[in-house]
Amino acid sequence: MMHPAIKGVAMKTARKFSVAVAVATLFLAGTSAGETVFVDFEDLPRGANVTGLGTVHPNLNIETIHGTDTPVVVETGYGVDGAGPANPFAYAAPNTIQPWIPNNCLDDANGSTVQVSSFEPVDEPTAKGFADVESRNTDTPQELKFTFGGRKVTRFEILMTDYGDFNFGPDHHGDNDTAPKPYHEVGLFAAADPTAEHHDVYDYGDPGDGELLVASDVLSYYTDTVPNPTLWGTNPDPTTWSGNLFVEGDACAAPHGPDLTEEKPGHIHLSVEYPDGLGVVYLLAPHGADPHVAFDDIVMDLLCGKCDGKVTALTLRYLGTAAAEVVVVQKKDGNEVFRGIVDPSVDDTFSFVGTWKKGTLGTEIKVYVDGVFNVQIHTSCSQPIGPGMVFGDFYIVEGQSRNGGYLCPPEPDGCKDGDSDSDSDSNSDSGKEGDKDSDSDSGKECKGDSDSDSDSDSDSDSDSDSDSDSGKKKDE
Image (tube, rainbow, N blue to C red):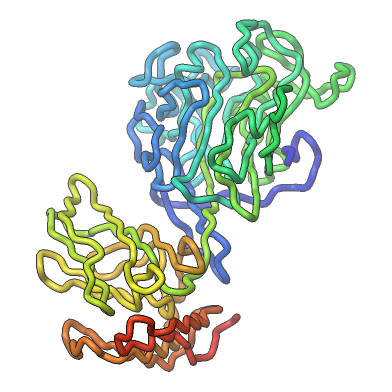
């Protein structure tokens, strides 16, 4: 969709989230439609490279489409023009103050704009974002690619700062014509297919271009053909132009929320939505260029569903402080689905998949640390399970269920449900390590969880394996 401030279409919904850490998962009230993640860059050092899956979030990979490898963290008040990643400079703001202050008016972890008063500020709070400084230093448009580690997102949003007050540089294909351009177009272009290339989502004029585009949010306008333009408008007729891009294209002087319809190019949120899920999002500047910009405040709604048909895969984070041997065992058949040394100083996460019926983990798994039982996790979908939950010394990072796909975060009320898993204790381990094969809970179910998995007992293990929850449903 076109940005409402420029194209006058329907207002986009508010997208600010207050968080206390650089990456936070927000639990959604009601029936979950997605896992909302807010990504800022406050905990990363100035100059840190942000490319690669997992660098800023486990489900976000940031790349450039020009082959550069320098999208790096920039910080308000710090940076030297033309410097490398160790001291990155994306833009200067506000335009009315000299000496100019690098990277000014980025957002902090709460989504609030931070404006500092001097270069290398002392005793002032700062904020961080990121920019492709190599493209910026060569006056090439900053164009980016975002993918999600095999996941899909129903919404993707990013803040772009300081666009529009500088009109210099080649168009997308780098034709070496650095003259100021009369027409500008920059925005998000997205496809459901994660393998789509940038020409699959934008029509550059070649056959097949743009055929995979399913969502876009575009800022487009006409302006003066001078390095620092002033008047601008959506009509090519200059007599219809108004405003002043030297102000409205400035990161500090441009209007800042909360009404997103009042945003101008200098501080603008670009957002794309697609209910079936986006596999790749491109930030492109096909026409015109202001390479002296930065980005911040990424919001993603990761596509997910409620647990249904038993859990098939989990990624856990070990919360211990020292390396330990971790063993995960399916309770139903005793099969080990993971055994390995997990060292928090190297990588505290590990993943495994089920080998029980239909590729599931069965109804429960047991986790051991250095040979000692640590915790039992219910995996039949009849009790809450999802990202953000902690069981013993383990935090659930991600999971999947057989029918529901990737797991949404659990309901915040943590209600228990009526799981009538009448599984006979065929392995005669009753009473060991908290083991109880017959889960005849009579409490209420979590919202909408019927979990009627009537799996036939094809392996003749005396296990009925029928999760026919009999409790009342809550607020379905």
